[in-house]
Length: 421
Image 1 (cartoon, rainbow, N blue to C red):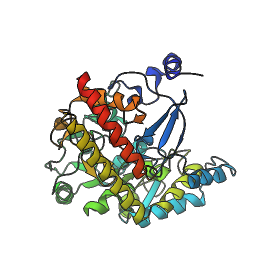
Image 2 (cartoon, rainbow, N blue to C red):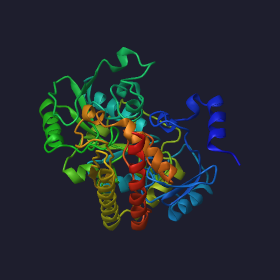
Image 3 (cartoon, rainbow, N blue to C red):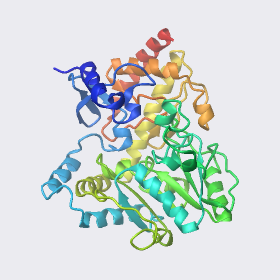
């Protein structure tokens, strides 16, 4: 039987760093990544046959849990009719209608294949609509790996302590303005758009402070700039209408991903009809994709959205709150400083006494304590994100009993971690 160590060694010979996305490498927590062989519900199994309770859940995409029977059935049915056509399909229309029904600000929708593609094109649309060049983003927020947006980003960039990326020319970010999160900036009349995660989930989980999102809306209106909400993580996770429904904010453009693909490569952006009218073939802003609206991904997305009713969101939020309270109690009792912020079904895990409010305070969390706790949990069969700058994603498949078991294991893990510290 192949081991994780053997497979990682082989991977390093043919894949840069042995992984196809940097945060998977365990660089910030140390050790060898586990290679997943299969997954079901709340669990993943590695190539050695070991089972882990999974709080990564494909970085939030698997809100129902892994391999939900109705999603698998929908994908299998779709695959029998072909996997890609390069032509329009009915399910593209159905998914766009489902998005518009749940997120009314998305009067028109364009389906794409990744969150990066969604944010990248939303920025292009904003520039095309306004005739302006500057984009305002927030320190520590992550909007994918397009050149324009690789400036002081969170997620993988934060994990590797990189403020940007080699290979990105200064000209690519010359019109990208980076400002502190949770502070409403001055918006000039040369700004095309403000792009923000309404709940920051790529520098750990950081909720918006009172007045922040409302202030951004007002500042954009005053300057004639567009407000773009990056809801790739929060969309259809914080509730039927995402963060914008929860906080009562109407953006001009919204970027969506993760949940709407049901675990397959799918994302979208949408917004005001007049703004989206700039997009080709209606307008002069170009975007295209051979796999956009892929029939397998749209089938999965429709199956997921059909199962996400108010009761599902209430259950998700309740279980996240229960997990957060339990982790806070047992880690603190072990003698480690801890804060576990919760926003709906999302939670963070910081090893400090206060909940961070921006990227600077997020980075003040004890990364060594997180790494020690991460490995103690992994040794006990619980998989947390392999980076202190990521959120935890309990799913509908995580039962109350499994959450209680996680908390029990966390008590022992915290006690062992503090001895390592």
